[in-house]
Image 1 (cartoon, rainbow, N blue to C red):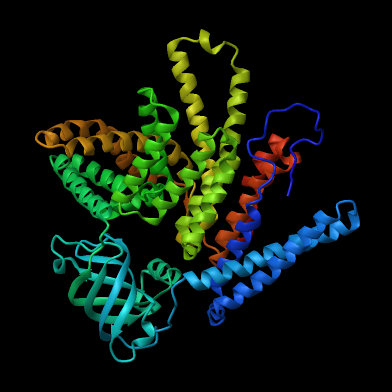
Image 2: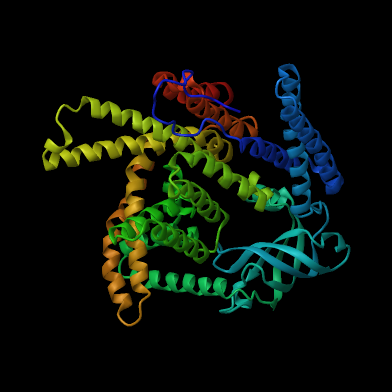
Length: 580
């Protein structure tokens, strides 16, 4: 699938930002289609995975045979065109069937237990994910191993949502991978039980949860996870939370700043005050509290800058940076968004490390493919969709748009950069930073707006300005806050030094706090919705198509006016037609 950037092979030109072909799309697109089909077609689970597998092998054999015949008859153009068309059709179909088999094999079984009445049960389950949003309970997802109770045998092997009081595990919190035996009330997953929490109910349905276990009176850990590293990370997390409380408890403002820092670095959203949550939500900056690509990239830039300043060899610097970030991801509990972000950066940075910086989009595709293979059900996660669409939008649209405006500014600057005075250089760099920030924020806004409208029923136009103004403060707060927490964990005088170091992060943290309060009071927040939530992902994909065409089609790429105005116009037309 070749898409050439210049029809004249003899004309010299700089290499394109991305390669001229995207062969991984031949696998990624069937993978996404297969997983989306399996998620939205309940009847498919009645077809055994081996049948999907056999069907995939049949089409794969046909594609391989057609490709081999094409190689055997290179001079027959008519035959080659037929063989080429055959394998181009058969290969995606084979991939689709094989990915359906993988979904059916990997995804947990789903039992419709919503119409049955709640009943007491003794359950043995393995924890898969743990959440700390509640102050009284340990919440998480788990897979049932054994269950005893009236008519509950069908739930063995399915996934449940559990809520266990923390008092049952004093100082001995369960971790992912551990086996727990608990007695409680098992309830079917029904929308009536989650009135006012439709988003949470949708999340449980996407995760293929069959029932919930609540009102737990007895619980014990039968088999602890033997992974010493994970238990060590859990102790570090607890120590960081304690240190944060100690360095931010001297005044109300320090406490408010500490809540933001804890939510931002440790992913503890429950630390935020209700008004803080509302302000960040209205300004479209709530994403800074989901430990994801923003946090990982900010910390990665800080670590690389420090190591480069110490004249560390390039390979060692990159290796140390990735290792440190993996350690951080495990400390915060390895949430899926953080793991995806780390995996994404591994692929993105690998291209740069080996001198292939223009392979960024390929790295993004590899990351998405790898993440979906590990966990097929994550395709239905809103955070997964937003993170990859936003990063792709920044690569395909935001960075080229920023380069375009920077070239315009450079061409209009009549004085050489070296001849500028200090204050002129500072103003010039601020101007470039503002332009780049606006372009990147604009790309993220265009890609994510349809999904945000579908999920939250609102469109915050002030999020453009809010992200341009506040993201630099997030970077500064993350660097200085991480430094303060590390200092506070030192023995002896660590807390005292941590309180002093925490002063460095007070200004950016308070800017985030009071800046969002001021911006949320401005007009520019519209309540919009779609007839169906599927319009959200469709709208984002339509806008993404304009980004992709702008990079791959020569007519788009060679016309800045057409390339950079098509996405916002497409989004406006889509909202005018479908949003209300």
